Length: 145
View 1 (cartoon, helix red, strand yellow):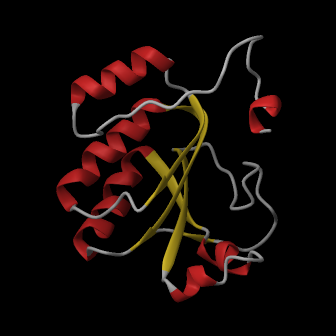
View 2 (cartoon, rainbow, N blue to C red; view 1 turned 180 degrees about the horizontal axis):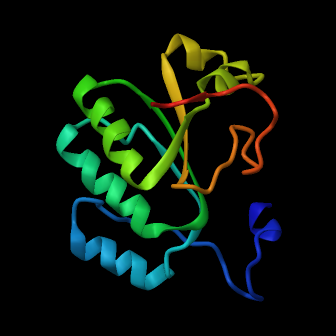
């Protein structure tokens, strides 16, 4: 159903590529195959080792265009890795904590029990809001400092 909504050329199908973000060769191959500049980058449970945070952020930055929205849903499994995500991420992205919107979403109450954090990241200076439109929802949200 989503493929019908996407702006695909006739006969073109969505595809997935495997990539290790700590492997420069795989990052470059993925960038070459896709052209980068994705509308959205979505990740879950991708922050678990401090040594992998910088390659993750650099990969997201490499694949992001000016209007890309990055959504990360994660649990704080490693406090040092989580702190590194926020610190390193701020070099390239504006980061908003949208956890309140996640836990208020019907069917997502378990996110609070699991202590999930939802972060919205946009290339620095591009603004946005937790509603996903990029224009803000008018709701109060917490900027990650």
